[in-house]
Length: 86
Image 1 (cartoon, rainbow, N blue to C red):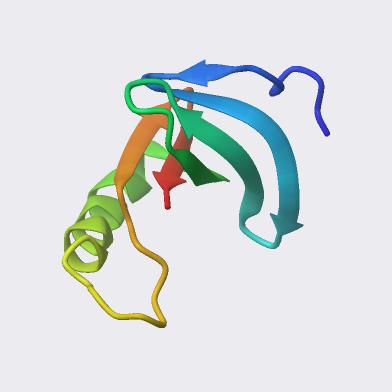
Image 2 (image 1 turned 45 degrees about the vertical axis):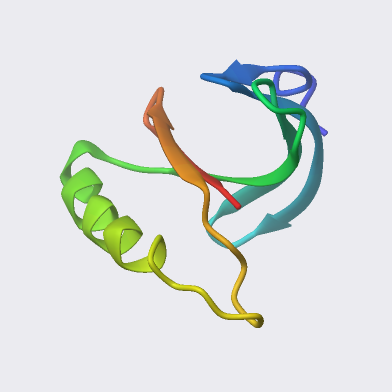
């Protein structure tokens, strides 16, 4: 795990540990500091140009509700990265 990410706080979410790495970024185990719920935090680098397209996709996925689809909770953009909270 990248030592600089451990215990890093992004808005109301704290990174506990990195649990995976893929082609698009890292996946962290995190905790919602407001309610104590454990979450997955998918961290991906983004450019300013990508923000609009990503926001469009987020609006689509946040309304999905199916037993075979990971539930989307939130998204945070910080330091040229987007964190999808799942």
